[in-house]
Structures are given as structure tokens and as C-alpha cells.
Image (cartoon, rainbow, N blue to C red; front, side):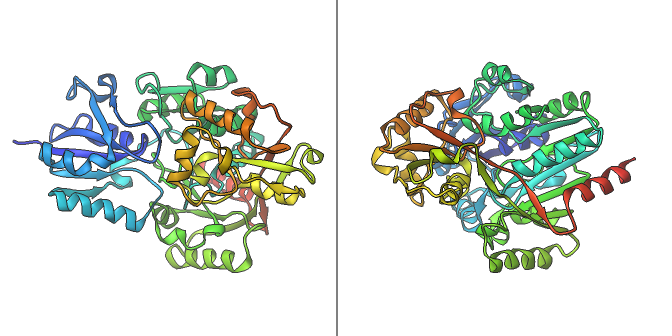
Length: 441
């Protein structure tokens, strides 16, 4: 019998998960290659043979998504799998049209074929869009469960942008572990706050292996989602965070709408910075597509460690990268804090950009007032450092969750922005978690 020839469209995360759980040992299929998008420099690599199994002794190549039509025709591909997240629906179907026009079928795989079962209670935190506030929700859940006496281990959505074989199953409990695995700025943004709070974080490529390792250390597993992807695991409690600053996106982005439809609990975040109409619109959309979901409204108040350093000063604002790049936001917590604490001016960074950051601003033209903390490799970290140095400003506002001075030299005064979840109203996460653990007993 002829095998079905497959290409998997991805961005170093969902694509590898779908391969591992469905295609790896499936002799009916021949995965010819992956394609890569969204993240710089993740193409032109190879998914290594150690991870591909016996059917792929030479591993699987990864090509740029721009070569899609050529790859389909050259390899006589039968089926293309769409396997990455935070895409507007028109982009999803533009990809589909390219696939169909080149002669192949277009597939999207769902929870039934891609979720892994866990042997411990598992809570998933996902979102309608990148940058909605999953991380602060996850941090608060972990701390509350710890206060209730449970051992919690966090599993983070994959960000394997380096050596895939070395990143098969990673465990982070100290800053030394971050250095050991040469983590990117994006990874540090997600792992450091959990480490600061005393929690172990697992991540990598092989999420079957990861969950089995995590189960040995935990009473409850906490899935910390990435972008607006749905969970890699069958979940006992499914929490989804929505962003009213992008109200309406919960009905127009893949797979964010699917998350909202699957949610047990929806958290409408950032109500302190959104207008009332935006919040009402999100609540209405939740009720329309998932009337059974419980809804929590929450604020994300920002604070900084030394307000006098930036008051009446000209500042450069650094934001976490994913929120203001493929997340589509023009600003984040850093910009909000700069306004709140009375800076004289938020400096336009564009005249001072160095190296790869110029390309980032060309790719994301909505960026004007803030610099994304791009650092997927050492060269990008250096470009960010040089941009900060070159910018004519009095101080730097760090909206990224990490202290950038751990990985670069900043020769200007700086403040760090902190933001946590603050639920508004009678229904809150503590009540949700108490009901959850009582049900699981």
C-alpha cells in the first residue's frame, strides 16, 4: 500500500507535537518535511533521527513556509497539516488555498488525535490570543495550589528554537538550568517567574516523556499554554484567558475560538485598561459560543520598582516579544506603566534600531513606540543590547517579565514592570480551585 505523503506546517511547537503523537510510528504516512514560520531562524534545520523513530532514520528536514507550493509539487504531497497557532481565519484559509491550488488536501488536527492523557489531575491555562495574560494566571494558580498544600509542577508549551535533540525533555528549577540549556529571552520570560516562586518547569519537544517525568514530582500538573494554542493534554479543568483590548478576536483567530468553546472557565483580563464596551463585547461573545462557561473578570495592575527613575524622563520601552510581534499588540505592560508613572516622553525607537530589530519592525509595521525583547539567538540579544545603548533616552522601562541585565549589559538607568492578576467580583480563582480539588478527591 502506498503511504500518504505529508507536510506539516508549523512554528517549532504544535507541529512537533502532532508528529510525535500521530505520525511518528504510523506506517500509513510518510512525513516528507516540516515547514517553519513566525519565529526567526527556525527553518533550515532537521528534526533529528533520535526523535523521529525507526520510520525516519535520517530525521526530517525543516524548510521555509515560503517554499510550500514547490515542496508539494516536487514531492507529490497528498496532505498538508496546519499545525501552528495565533492566526487570523483569513490567514488559515489563505494557507489552505495555497495547498489546494498546489494539489494537496488541507488538514487541521484536533484534541482527540493530539492530546495526551495524564495520570495526575491536570489544569490547562490557554488563551484567545498571544499576550492575553496566561502567565500571570498560571503563576497565581500555582501559588494558590501550593498554599493549599499541593505539589505543583508546571509544563510550558514548547519553545524549542535551539538543538532539538538536546531539548527533548528539559527540567528547570534554577537559573543555572536556564544557562545550561542556552534559553532564549522568550523562554526566560516564561520560566524565570515560576523559578522565582519555587516551582519546577518542564518543557521541550517530547511531551509524552515530559508528562511522565512531571507526574513523578507532582500532585497536580499545570499546563502553561503558549500563543493561543489548545492544550497538549487531556485536562480536568480548562481555563482560557481573553483580552478585551482585542475584543472580537476570540471569534476570528485560530485556535483561540476553539479554546473559548472548550473552556470550563473564561477569564476576561485587563479590564482596568480596556473600556467597558470592549469588556461587554467579550462577555457577550463568550456567552454566545460557550454559555456554560464560568466567567471571571480581572485586572492586571502594573507597578514598578523605582518610579522616580522615570518620572518626567524620556524613556525607551521594552516589551515581551510575542505579545507585540505575532500577538499583534502595539504596546504592552511597559508602555502602560510608562504612562501611569508620568514619563515626559516615550522615545520612538525606530531611528536607533540595530541589525535584526530593523527586520522585526519591517515585518511587524504596527510597531512604533516599543521595542520587542527579541532574543532567539545570541546575535539578536546583541542587537537588542546595542539598540538600547544607541537610543537617546534617560532611562529604560522593562515590560518583559525578566531582568535583561542577567543576559546583557545595560548602561542606562532602568525599571522593571511587575503585573499580577487581580480578580474583580465574587467569583475568583481560589473558589474555582477549591471546587476543583474537592471534586478530584
